[in-house]
Length: 433
Ligand SMILES: CSC[C@H]1O[C@@H](n2cnc3c(O)ncnc32)[C@H](O)[C@@H]1O
Ligand SMILES: [Zn+2]
Image 1 (tube, rainbow, N blue to C red):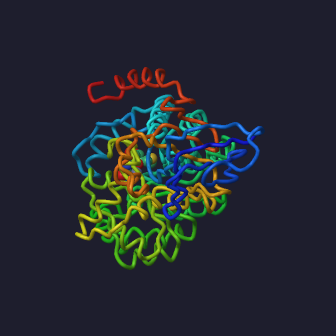
Image 2: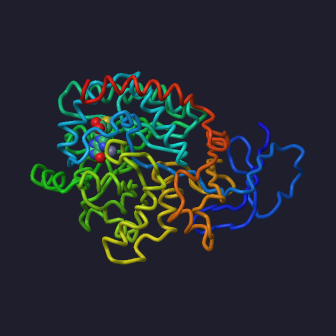
Image 3: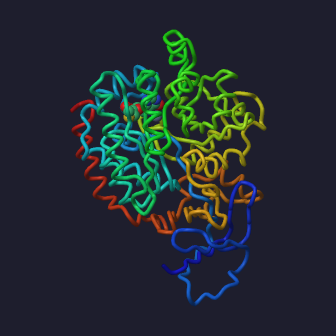
């Protein structure tokens, strides 16, 4: 495929490599070949040129935790804590979902994420063949898992069977944009022997695991009462932490938990907005970062957030811990940006270097308008991106070098059709149905 040259007004290659002046990115076959300041020095006649002199290029944002099709449940179960939210409102609504609904709900999520600068996301849900079809069509990169629960023998067996068939059909599909992982829901829905079985399957298939861990104090207290240890320690005893693991939430941790997360290189998805909305608490992100744990940022599903805007999440991650700790140095702009980009990419098991705009990284690129009010004035470009910019400033999105949003317009999605189908499903799924 031919080379593409993107000319921009400024670049943030990574948190510690900011170019606040015009420059370029050159890519081929979805991979960045060169970046630089000023005018591209090579021959221009052989390359396709995209000129965006009034935009800043940043690495695409990585959403490290979510349930994409829960966009269909946006607004259901507001103002409830996690367990009541799940059992009284979410599970009964999810019981009405079909593969077709998950397909449209996932497309809706893809639309929202593309529009707000996310290029890669994780998903743990049901009817995942339908979700994967939506991802393939959207052009996004995704790390998908079929959610597994072990309430009884039948759903345990079904969970393993679903995960195997999903892996067989979709792992490394969509030109490598889709990765399949295993998704045991949580220690309170998956008993220890089931978690051990999932760990064995993960080793057999050679794929990582994503799981909710230590989200609420109630979860930790009940785990200690039932199993004599914290959810993190339980996951270790079940053999889960011998495998690559992405743990969502990790709000209620002991010092020993944090040491164990670091020792086993468990990646943590920090979901500040969901944790606040479900009244779960605030994750000890400063302690996790200090211990050397890789922390990314996630939105969680749209029923606990209630949007999939990672710019909001990025800003909250950079401000929340300052307020809670009364320490203005807690989670700097650079740390938050890293969490949303390169650390996020590591969280979701992408190869080293992804989540940056350095040569060798995937050409997953987001452009923000320098004409936006949020870039006036611009003394410190990274500060503008983290503390001022928002989804409304996103003009263009590329994944693996392919345009998904061009000057504000979705390229891959028929958004009018998505709007129509979601309105239809709303009447079936909503509380008044
Ligand atoms: C088994 S598929 C995923 C399952 O998880 C539910 N879910 C969504 N958000 C959360 C959360 O923050 N904690 C725990 N479980 C969550 C979702 O509704 C699905 O049932
Ligand atoms: Zn979740």
